[in-house]
Length: 388
Image (tube, rainbow, N blue to C red; front, top):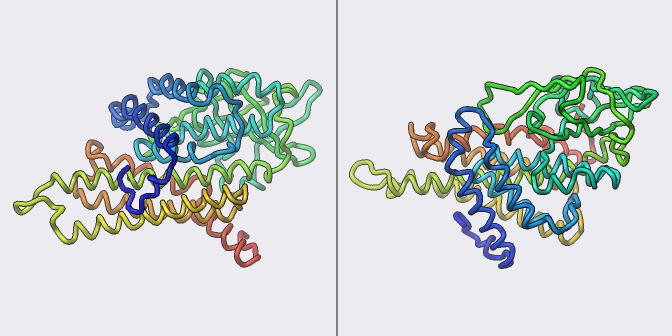
């Protein structure tokens, strides 16, 4: 794997290396040839779902799906590979596998798990997840306006959600709302065809364009009690799920940085100016070394965080936040240098950097903004809450 200057990836077991090789080959065959066109048109590549689902079924279909996984490293390496090849697909997978399926696994009843999870492993059914709202993002723990009102027959759901991934093609959407009387945070399994569910695709994005994000309006959506996730009542529960997401996004950022480095490295070997390859110029070598330095620091941080998790059995919220903050800052820097190395060609999709450069902007903001993760770490090391 390029780059791996400190040989982190050589420490992986042969079985994990084989697993990642197979996954990378699947992406090379089914994603790489079509993704620039779909990204440019702002359309999700539906043809990827079947081979992606077949891979997941073959690898994990014989196991019970459990989230968080007992051995998370293979899934984080999948996020790295997805980031390296196409971050839109990384978000598609994260929403489906980690958020939608993760919510059902962590908070659902046995009946809900049996109904949804087997077909979701193979991607025969697709999941979405909806927490963020038009006027509530970083303050979702307190500021949600979507409401769930208890009725004689179950629940009535009213409100709006924004940026929900996969919802335009989902079979089930995990929707979060505050209880009208009581203030509990409740999760519901909503099917898009239900009366009162209105889904509108968000257009004109400059990032993650092959990922379909939507605006959802909920108008008195009538739900039965068995459509409520029974084992969650507050944001602390959801926060444990989002902690895993922050770590996964850190690996995605690393993958993006590695993809940009690989494209830039290949470019400088072929591009000639003043009669020789530009890889022979001092300033280009400095840029490559700067990129490699940031990537090696990210790799070292994430592999060590994985060892910490293996040793203590968990990762603290502040540890996940520091990883997300550090890796996204460094990946953003690597993307900027890679685009700069290519000059004008750096803004063309066909040279392999422009799409990753643009997608990194979304990665920098989601799963906790840079500012929110800074304050989470600051609270951890000082004991003082400086959020408000």
